[in-house]
Length: 229
Image (tube, rainbow, N blue to C red; front, side, top):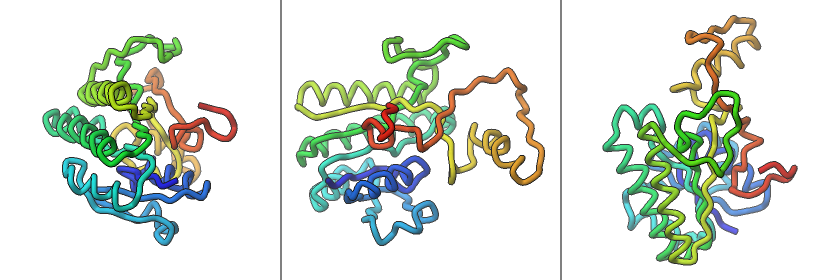
């Protein structure tokens, strides 16, 4: 099995890479700005391709030349960035995902796994669990683009016999998490006490946020070995 991961050198992508390599799979990392600090010990085991999601030809060539069986599409314009620059977020997230799906269809890739987000649900009641049966109602640009991408994937699955799955992640945390956006106070709460320092969340203790440890996440779009989805 050969898997191409878009955004594969980022936080979640790097852990996906480790998971797949541990299974003996071949991994191709497709990134516009490939970085090596999170996978420095894996460089001899992976193939790196510098490429833009918006460059359809380069993306299709990467899929074809490396005989890719599956794509895990983890690259996107993130939440706080999307809200600050909506037109670019729509272009990168929606058009980029359309390119991933179409290139996969043309080349004959069997499966596309899409990293979506709990933000597609919008504001939900505090203390009540959210299930896949709850109606999506995104209230942010990021959530709206991710929901659009889900519908694109469902359309390709229905009309082109493509195996597609979207995994709606909450906030994922763990080792090597980059410090930006909402994760900065989260990192302080986890890391400062280890260093003997105090940590403060400026907005107070009534803030709620769903958190998922990276090793408990379904990184490849499949059930984890211990049975958790």
